Image: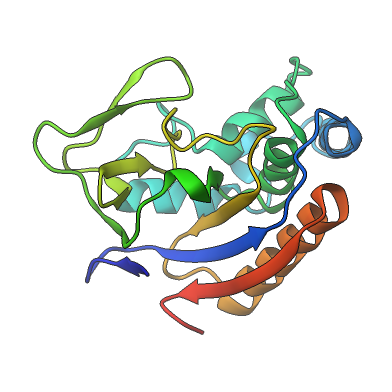
Length: 217
């Protein structure tokens, strides 16, 4: 159902959950803001490039032809806001868990409404003219860039995701994705995925249907 085109320098952790109850409650957002404050204290005088974990997502972006000093991975963008004590935003419980885990793991993380995805899903290079309306209110142009695509076309990337597959309080079934460079420790990636799933289940309820690494562990 999910695959990666050959030779792409990436691995994915994918999680499938159903029976969710996505509320507008703040438990995950409080965890996110508390973690941000921890980073502020721990790394107050440390350049962001020297914080453990940052180089993993940066190497991933370089591998997909993006300059991470000009366009930050979503995880580093969160970290940058945390270090500068800029406001963080709550969306809903499921998205907030994703942001909490992204800041915790320092890897790009995405959450998708499974009902809006039409398998099979492939991680591939964007084709000429491909784009989608992003959650950052911009058109995301994908030619030559890594993206996730289903039968209707691209819907996600490690930069930002599409409006088409976005999560709302009506979401009952979701796919969660962690993006990591190919050389990232696979045992650690599996632990991250397991913790991500546990946090969602604790806050949003539901049942775990699948937790899988691609390529497989």
